[in-house]
Every structure is written in structure tokens, then in C-alpha cells.
Length: 247
Image (cartoon, rainbow, N blue to C red; front, top):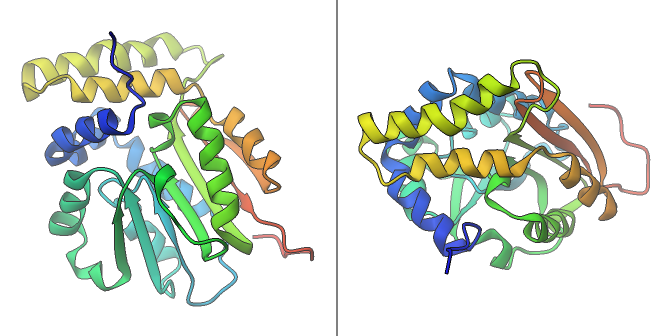
């Protein structure tokens, strides 16, 4: 019987095994675009209304979005990072962000099973975690974001996507499906875990369906494309019942 690649324990295994090389692999093999897209995800996040805002980084991985988030909004009081992978969080704290640890708390859990409190977050952000969920899980995630945000709370999520309609799409897909597995096989000698990241990305498609799920939960949503659709994202707010200034 084939394994369910969206089962939480399968996902945890993939990212635990590749955590020690994830930062270098994702940066070099995306030609630096992952870092650019993280910054753009933060730029798309509507400004939190609370000066000392607290919020969630969902599917936080190695926490590479935190420097961008804290640079743009230095008054942020706290970030709760939620991720299922022990290895990814340890990598984040020991290699990148030990000096930011006073602002970071961590929940190691499947985000869809976490008992995050209702209406407690000024913001929700997530970079490159959407691909690890199937459609049913995306609906649960949309409901979770709507439930966790305070009225007026903001959100921004981004994911590598399938750039349908772009004339260089065949080359992009060749890079994901052929080049990345070859790099892993011959240079990293891994267990095809990085190749799974390419599989998740191509299966994902784009964030347009997720945008509609967020709208169905009553959120104000903007859908965006980055670099010809090689990444797509959603951002917006939870309504308050009053008009909010543009961000």
C-alpha cells in the first residue's frame, strides 16, 4: 500500500531528515528566490494593529522569515512558531536565531491538531508550508487561521507554485522534477527527501483555491503571483465590522 505523503508523520520524517541541509539546499537550488519570496510575503502582510503584536508563524520550518518580519515590524512582542519537525526547529534556534529566542516560542505539533486559542493572534504568517497539505487539510487550515486571528488581525502566506501559462514553465518543472533529485542523489546522497519537496510543490498547483477557502471563512483576501506565478500567496485581514485603513 502506497504511503500517504500528506500524513503528518510522513511529512515530519521528510523534514526531520533534511533539516540539517535545508537552508543551503533551498537557497541554492531556488537560485535565491526563496529568500526573496519570504521578504515579499512579509511585505504583503498588512501591518498589525497592535503596536506590540503577537502572532503565529505556521509550518515555521527553520524560521527564515523571522529576520524579515522583525526588521519590518521591530515592535513585535512575540512569535509563536508552530511546526511538526523537531529537526527544523532545532536548526532554526541553534544556527540562525538564538539571539532572537526571547521573542520566539515554539509548539512542536501538527498545526491542524494544535489547540491554538481563539482570537489570540494579531497576525499569522507562513512561508512554504502550504504544499505539505492536501485539499481537505487546506480547508482545516483556512478555518484555523480565521478562528485564531483577532478581529482586524492580518495574515500572509506564500508557496512555490506551478506557473501555468508561463512560456518557461517546462524548464521550471524540469528543474523541480529532474534537476533537484539529481542534485540530491549525486551530491547530497540523501534519501530522496529533497525530491519530495519538488513533488509537494508540483502537486500544490497555486494558492488560488486556498484563497477561496479563506474567503469562505469570512476573511478579506488578496491573491498574488510572484515571478510569473512560480510562487503565489494570499494576504488580508479578519474583518472588524469597521473600515480599516489600507496597508
